[in-house]
Length: 261
Image 1 (cartoon, rainbow, N blue to C red):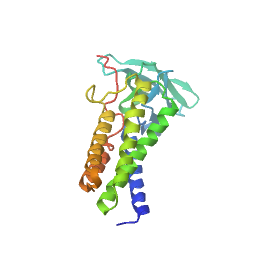
Image 2 (cartoon, helix red, strand yellow; image 1 turned 30 degrees about the horizontal axis):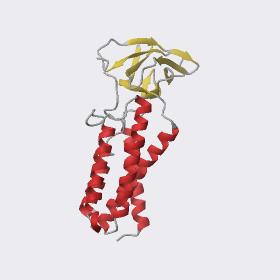
Image 3 (cartoon, rainbow, N blue to C red; image 1 turned 180 degrees about the vertical axis):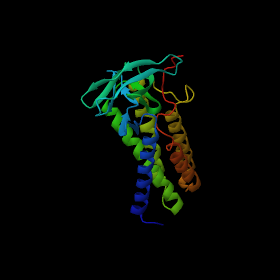
Image 4 (cartoon, one colour; image 1 turned 90 degrees about the vertical axis):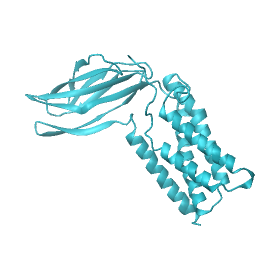
């Protein structure tokens, strides 16, 4: 059996990689990229999440004063025609504003830049942004911490099961963290942001809620298998792998949204 600190180090590394991957592949992570216009490289970073309290200002830095542009947007999902808004120049910035939307309202938008006869699209495919109400820090940060620690303890429990260590306490702590983070603080955050407590099965297909439900069910089964002093190493390993798999799904996929159709 490996030394505990080695297993904790491995578990922490796996958890950090999983958290970064989930964040960077999620639908709320900013769209980044580069385009070339007039021989100049133009970098962009477009936000895909915004609070309902104000318009979402979209900016792109283009020092060349001969470059102009416009922004097209429409509600998503819908078959509405795109609204077009000219970009205003403020020093090196070209900017326009997306109108405020109610919680869970989505807009798709795209920028066109012009320089003489040249034009480029930013980004190549329309970006999507979702509006949400603000979430209180006393809900947001404990939720993030509980889910991160739940993933950490889950991975550590799986490693303990594989290496012949004691899994009982690790499994119980994992179950408790996932319950508090996903079924106490998670619904509170969902309600504050979008006005709904739960959008997973049986009320919807929000993958964030559903993957939390699957992970908790897997650890509930593992904890049940551990009753009476049993080792239940197979159940613990399976629960750890299920948790790793479902948390690899990008955050906020199939999340709350208004169907404008």
